[in-house]
Amino acid sequence: MKATYDKNDFKVSNEEIKGVRGIKNTLKALKLVKTNYHIVIGIIITFIISVGSAIISALVVKNILLIVTTGRFDECLVYAFVFLMLNIVDYINFYYKEYFWDVFNRDLKLNLQLKAYNQINSLKAQCFSETQTASFTRRINEADKISTFFTTIANQLQDLFHFLAYSIVLLFSSPILFGICAIFYFIKNIFYSYLLPRRKALNKRHSALYDKVSNISIESIRGATDVKGLNFEKPLADNYKSGMNDYASKKINMGIWWRNRIMPVNFFAFTLSTVTLLLTLYFFNSYFSIATIIFFWTYKGNINGLFNILFNFQENFSNIEVSSSRYMELYDEKLYSTEKFGQKVLENFVGDIKFKNVYFSYEKGKTILSNVSFEVEPNKITAFVGKTGCGKSTTLALISRFYDPTKGKITIDEINSKELTKDCLRSNISYVQQSPYIFNRSFKENLLLVNPEATDKEIETACKKAELHSFIKTTKNGYDTIIGENGITLSGGQKQRLAIARALINKSKIIMFDESTSSLDNENQSKIQATIEKLSKDHTIIVVAHRLSTIINADKIIYIEDHKIKATGTHDELFSNCKEYRELYEVENKAKSEEA
Image 1 (cartoon, one colour):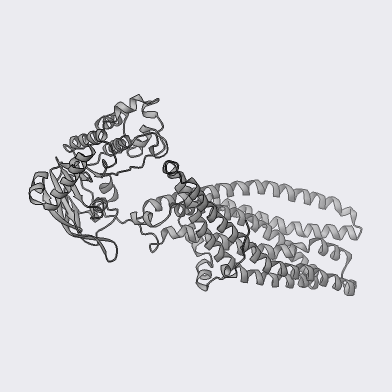
Image 2 (cartoon, helix red, strand yellow):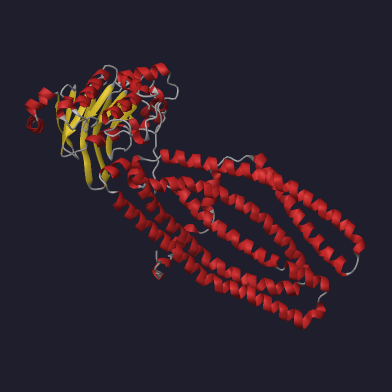
C-alpha cells in the first residue's frame, strides 16, 4: 500500500482545534462516576511519599558524589544505610500505589462503560437509524482509554517529581549550566504546544473515519447469512480493504507530517544544548567543581525529562480529551436525543388506545400521518392495512413511543402516553417485528432477558401458548439449547413464535405484530394467525398486515391511504363500503389463484 501525501489532509480549522482544546470533557466524564474516597486518600498518601522520596534521593546522590570526590569515604556507611532505607520505602510505597490505582481504574472503567451502555439504551429510536453501530460501540470503548489515561498520568506524576527534584538540585548546583539546558528544552516545548492541538484535531477526524470502516465489518458479521447467500463477500471485502487502506494511509501521512516538524525541533534542542554546554565548560571550567560537573553531566537528562513530562502531560491530556469528547457526545442532546417519560403509573392497565388528531413526520415536509384519529379497544384485534409507506408501521412505533407525534395526542386508558413512566408503558406493550432479533443464547435465557423472575413453569406455559413448546422439546438440550447468532438455527416461523413467547413472558397487555406473517409460508402463517386469535381473549392485539387474508377475522380493520384513515370497519364492512380495500383484497386473491 502506497501512501499518497496530500497537504490538504492536514488543514485544520480553528473550529476543529477549539472543539478538542482543554480538558472540559474529561472532567465531565469524571463527574459521572461515583468516587471511592478511601482509594483516593490512599493514592494521595502514596503520591506524597513518592515526592518526598524523590527529593531526598536527589540530595543523597549529590552528597555521595561530593564525599567521593573530596575523599570523605568514612561517611559512605551512613549514606549506604540512608540509600537502603529509601529504596525499601520506595518498594513498599510502589506496591500500594499500584494497588490503589488498579482499583481506581477498574471502578472508573466499569462505571463509565455502564453509564455509556445505559445512555445508549435511553436514546430515541431515530438515533439508531441515523448512526452506525460502530459509532456507539467505539464510544463505549473510549471508557477504557479514559481509565488507562489516569494510570499513565499517575506514573508520569511520579516521574515528574523525580525529574523536578533532580532539576532543583541541578539548579542550585549551577544556575548557569541549568539555564543553558533549560532554555533550549523550553523553546522545544513551545513548538510542541503549537503543533499539538492540530495533531489532536486530526486524531479525532481519523477516529470518525475508523468508525465508518469498522461498521463494514460489523454489518458483514451480522448479515453473514445474506452475504454468503447472495455471494457478495468480495464486494464487501473490497469496501473494507479500501476503507482500511484510506484510514492507514492517512495515519501514515500524519506520522510523516508530525516527524517533518518535530525532528528539526529535537535536533535544535538536543544538539545545540549539548554543544553550548561543552563550550561553556571549556571556557569557564574554573568556575565549577569536579563534583558539580560530574553530577550535572550525569543527571542533566533530568532537565530534558522534566520538560518531556510536561509535554507528555499536555499530549496525554490532548489525546484523552479526544476520547472524552467522543464519549461525552453520547450526552449531547443536539447529537443524540434521549427519551423522556412521565411519572404516572396505571395500576390497572386495560389497554384502551386512542389517537386524537395525530400528525407525524420523520423529516420536515415529509408527512407520514396526517390528522389521524382512531381507537384500539382492549381485548380485541385491531388491524392496520394499506399500501407500502402509508404509515402503518409508524403507528405502532408511536404507540410504543419510539417516536412522538409532531402534533396531536395519544392516550392509553385516557392518560397521555407521554405522562406514563417508561416501565409502565414498555412493560405493558410488546412489539413483535417481521424479523425479531434473537440473542445468541438458549431459549430459556432469551425469555429470561425479558422477565428475569419468570419460573420454569411460566416459561413453558408461554411457549405452549406461542406453539413453540413442542419444537423446543425436540432440540438437543431442550430449553437450554443455544439458538445461535440472531436465531440462525431457527426458521422464520420459529423466530416469530419465540418473539410471541417473549411478549407473553413480559406479561404485556398490548401485543403488536408488524407484518409478522408476511415472510412465512402458508403453514407457519396459519399457526401464527391461530396463536394471535387465541391471545385476543386476554390481550389487546394490534396487527399491521401485508396479506389481507390474515386479518379477515379482526374485530376492526383500519385502512390507511395517503397518510390518512380512509375507512374503518370489519372485513365485510370494508369489502362492501371501501373500494380501495376491496381492490387490494381482489388483487391478492387473484395472485393466489395464479400461484395455485
